[in-house]
Image (cartoon, rainbow, N blue to C red; front, side):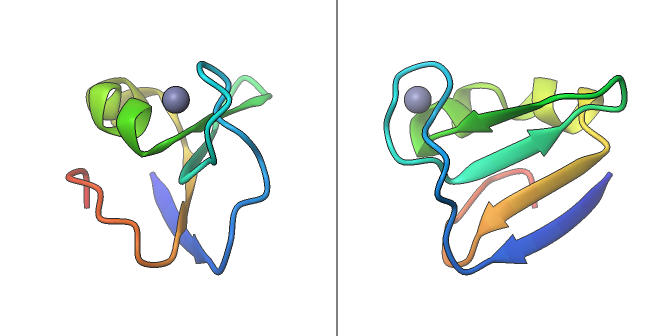
Length: 64
Ligand SMILES: [Zn+2]
């Protein structure tokens, strides 16, 4: 899994519509955006299924 930092994610969380903090790109195509709450609750899923993850700078995520 590749991690990239970005100054600001403009996407909204796909699950609740809050400001996105983590965007996960899937090997099969497509991507999912997670707010802080949902990034934390789906950490294991993101780590095992995404091949590229973009994280907003300053967001503290347990996966890294
Ligand atoms: Zn959310």
